[in-house]
Amino acid sequence: MLFLRSLIFFVGMAIFTVIFTTPTPIIVLLPYRWRYMILTQWSRVVLHWLRITCNLNFVVEGREHIPNGAAIVFCKHQSTWETLALQRVFPPQAWVLRRSLFMIPFFGWGLWAMDPVGIDRGAGRKALAEVVEGGTARLKKGRWVVVFPEGTRVPPGKRAQYRIGGAILATKSGFPVVPVAHNGGEYWPKKRGFLKPPGTIKMVIGPPLESTNVEPNELMHRAETWIEAQMERITAERYKTDGRITYYSRDNAARPS
Image 1: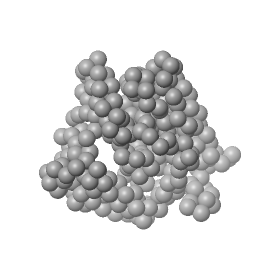
Image 2: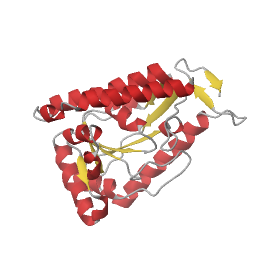
Image 3: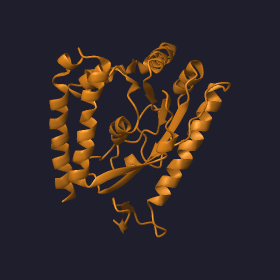
Image 4: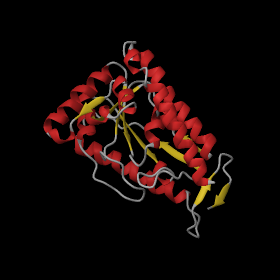
């Protein structure tokens, strides 16, 4: 049954992706506000479909920490899931991502139309300059900027070195950093992510970290310390004392797998 539910979800997601991104050549002619609103409905539909087919929901803790003005999101990167959920939780946003992703049929076209900060990771200082210049320009327009400081998806329970680019963007632009932790990778992992068990993914939003009068390394350290501490807490909540995995249903009733 788990395989069948996951297969139905995958097929539906593929269909929704084609439906929403095929009109991109027309949508891109619209003002940013309109095309962002249209294209992000894809994430809403996919997350709803995920809940229907796989009984996989999510909850958010710390919404009160979301500031009124634009900010930079430092998000843990474990899964495809957070790329959907961030669009539903935070205001209109631009992502810092690999420019090569724009070449992916349908999915990449939709990304490009949402005006992200595309970089070439192998370009070194040039890529860092693109992050700072492009990110600052979007922040000044009132858009949020999403950064995955690890640079790639990291399996649950693992840690990767946090990269300095997002912290430099914050300190140079003066916009605050909002740290985000979640356990999406425990339900939708990078590898073997086809099967999606039921349960409730937890996202935790931390208090904004001011970026003025602080060095990039210190800001990055503060964000990393908070995120990784929350990751340990979230994961611990998902396990019973006897070590069995516990999935949390929408009514918060725990049941062992």
